[in-house]
Length: 161
Image (tube, rainbow, N blue to C red; front, side, top):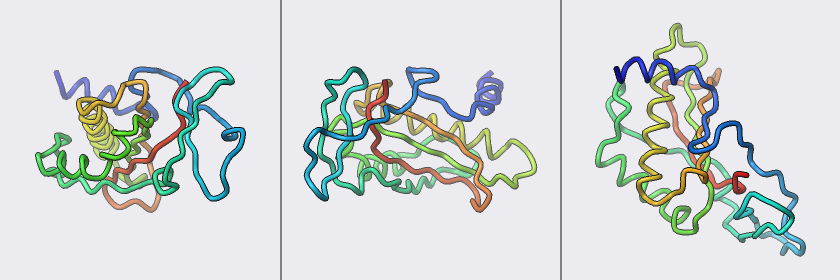
């Protein structure tokens, strides 16, 4: 049964945990930004956005080196410890996160696509178990021409509407 569910889920290109078809809020920035400081919105609605100054590197993708068995999407204890270490500060600051999984677009079957989908969902569920709200998580799975195998990365994003 789990295999059938995983197979059906792998055809979705973008999945937002808790909100379907939501998009990142497009925002120009706070009213009086400081030079050299990066900002992210903390809520998704109205003109009264709350802006949070963040390290600019948090807005850049950070690769997650997940070492789980190549065909098993479940996270090992080491993987969980590694994820905690890499995204702890983002979770503590209650920022919205995008977790992206990508795989080789030259793969001859859907195995890589399904595994990429299952693995990114597993990471998403783990982040939720660590305190991230479902509506603060965007999950994306993409085929990439130059990718070798499966890769995961995470970054902070503007609040989802």
